[in-house]
Length: 410
Ligand code: CTP
Image (tube, rainbow, N blue to C red; front, side):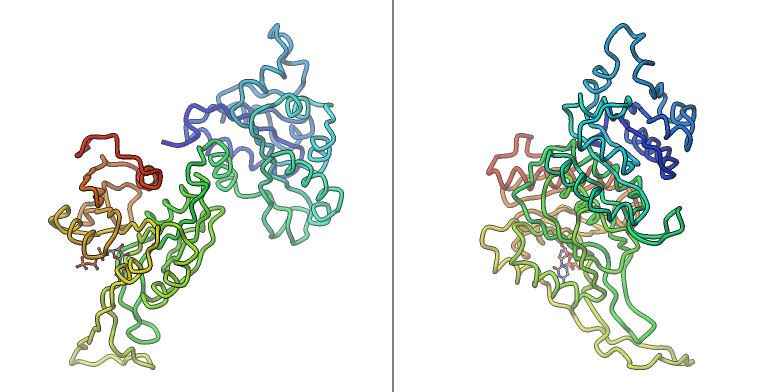
């Protein structure tokens, strides 16, 4: 369940060209079942119409402090009080300066003064304005008071310049708001996660791989950061975007992935091996592209040693979670791997189904642990499965016995 569900997000739109991106932001927030209330500065209404934002948010849009007073209550205080989080996007240099000094000259700045909920600012402006010490100091002031600053991205700016100043992607802003509203129950964890397939070279242009896309491991990384963990993600070749706040280490072959995992292992407090690591690799990859012939080609494949038992030998208080991709006898095979690989927990998934396993957005998993607990989830989104796995990690760290019955199958 999204952390945004049934939460009231108050979006303050500033007067900059990036205001048009507020429309996409509203759409993403409502898709996650948040209630969205939009307030705009009078200048923002030059860039995007209140009607557009009203239609997308399904709520009235407020611009003028005095529009709200006919409600027979102090409208701006009520707006501030009903918000679970406030996000200012785009936050112009002017809005940032006013918020930093406590000026209350428009509805948006007045609400910011009255707010007691978490607040995020997503700056967007010309690169030279963004680099100006006045803006940097104002942002620092806001940060020191506890506001989240969603850094702008670098790239081509509407003003014609290149550089930092582009409003962060709406999806990144949503991730930041979700984090603000999440319980930080993993704040003490440093979680190392592997994800995706590996590619084993046959020659310089061909490789052996598998159907994994990395979706499950990336979802765990996203959820772990949201819940306060420091996250390193060792990724095999994957087209997926790096989740916000996550340190990504790109690898290609199993040898690269496993050595990156081993190198980062001393850093972590928990390891989640969600990657579909190859079990075999071409014994001697050809140095040049192999030529076509009419006889065919037999590949000589050498085994790749399992990394998990080697890591388990260096365990020292770390929680180790593995995955088991199976096409038959899921529970029996997963239990065997739990023991053989010396794990604390294993997440088994049936990769022969069309609605679970590789390359889809949903998953059904069976989690087994060393205490003999078995839990099968219903079909959930991979984001939801990620939270179930992390719930189990948090409970294990807290030393809590699981409250659910031995076998939970909904
Ligand atoms: N794994 C690993 N090192 C490898 C291969 C796999 O650490 N060389 C990890 C995977 O990341 C996963 C777990 O081991 O967490 C199980 O992977 P899986 O491919 O399901 O199991 P295998 O041991 O390869 O067993 P089999 O191929 O017989 O199903």
